[in-house]
Structures are given as structure tokens and as C-alpha cells.
Length: 325
Image (cartoon, rainbow, N blue to C red; front, side, top):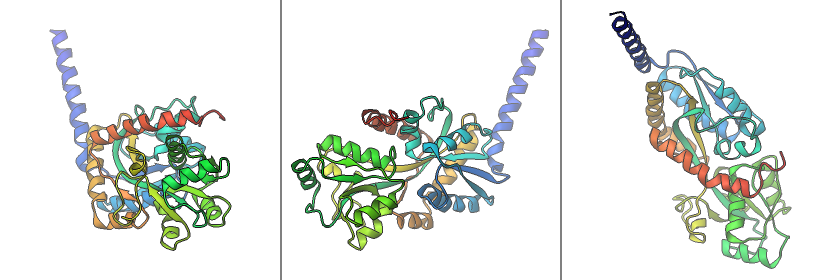
């Protein structure tokens, strides 16, 4: 009889816990929510975060406080996020590099991005552009490859900081196309763009948003975009896949929560995030920056993150991203 009473008590307690957890989502959030991002103030991740999450905060009638945890290839932000309480009041917005490059650069960090966090949704993605100086006598990717092979060791390219997705994209293009290009690291995208426009380098691989003004005013010549299809706003620019079938690459921002965050809260955030991303105002603001919204279900987000790791981590290993650390 005692055993039965204990079993009944245990069942009642478990049911109470489950009921309490499931009751959290309708009232969530009841207080401000923190959003940890690896980008510095006014950087790409920071701007995207404020466009999307300011709007989401208005929907929730709660402030979403963006915390900029910069440095160490995103590992500082990851460490803060993984230690946060799993109650839904701390969310985490890493870039793709945190999933791909951070494990190579910091093998002792012991943070597993796919297992230590819960995927909540994909926020946005941005295609990259392969562009050249107008002074360079090439007008297509094929011509660029041929030109580089005819003059080995003479063409340098910029692609943001070492280990970023623009850098990995450029290296993947170099490997698959056989182009003879030498990487010149820069502390950020704008520095590389300035050197391209100043004639000190010949090629750049960078996000569309960064190069948008220079493309529009003719300061550089775009040869290809890395999206799977041509962009509606630039239908004349071919894709890399038209030369190298299957080649696609985008930068992206994913929303995560610490492992253990109640599932009903994760579902609510995903639903409300997707509603926010589908709002015309958010779409228009991001598109003006060369960024596209990418609403996804929870399952699709998890599948996307796994597939991106499978594509890019071998590239990071091949070029020895972690070898100098």
C-alpha cells in the first residue's frame, strides 16, 4: 500500500510539473528578454538583431535587450549563452561561423552548438558577391579563373576576417574552380572594400549588403552571387552555381535558446518570430541591407544547422582554420 501511495504521489508531482511548464507559454514573456549576440554595436549581427527583435518586442509588449558579447570568433557570446538560465528569458543569436569555425579555432571550448542549445528559428540570410575592381580586365567568373591561372601569385582577394563565412566561401570557390588567388586578411569588410576601390587588391568576396552601394555606383564589378538563384533586384548577375553546379553559400543568423528551455516557450518564440519576419516592414528593412528573412519551423531549423555544419566544417579543416591557434 505504501508503494502505491508513493507511486501516486510521484505521478501527481510529475503532472503538476508538466502542467506548470505548459502553462508558461501563454503568459510568456512577462519580463524583458535578453538577446546575446556576438556582433559589436552597429555590426551586421547587431543591426539585424535590432530590426527583427525590436519589432518582436513590440509584439510581446516587452523590451528585448541586445547584449553585444564580442570577440574570440564568437566564443565569448557562446560562453555567456550556454551558462544562461534555461527559462526563455535569455536567447542567443549566433552567426554561421559559431557553428563552423569556432569548434576548429577553440577545440577546448567544449561547447557543442547543436547539443548545448535548442534551435528556435532561422532569422535571416544574406548572399555573398564575388566582385572585382573595374580596372581588372575580366567580366565573368570563367575569365577570372583563366586570368588568375595565367598570372599565378598575382591576384589577391579580401573576404572579411579569417574564418568568417565570406572567407570560407572564397576558399571553397578557389579550391573548386582552381583559381590562383591569395587571401589577404582584413579586420573587417569595409577595410577590404576600401583597398579594392583603391586598387591595392583585385578581388573581394563579401555580403551583398556591404557591397550594395559600390555595386550601384559602379565602383566595383560584380561577377556572381552565391545564392542558389539569381537575385530579383540584380537579375543580370549570374550565380556561382551556373559555373560550379551545386555551389551555394549564404551568411545567416540563427536564434537559439539554452538546452532545457521549456518546449512550449520555444514553440511560442518560433511562431512569434516567424510572424515578425513575415511582416512587410521587417522584410523591407532587411532587404534594403541586402539581407533576406528566412522563417523556418523548429524541425527545419535543426536540419538546416546540421546541413551547414556538414558543408562547411570540412572546408574549415582543409584550409587549416584552427592550425594557427
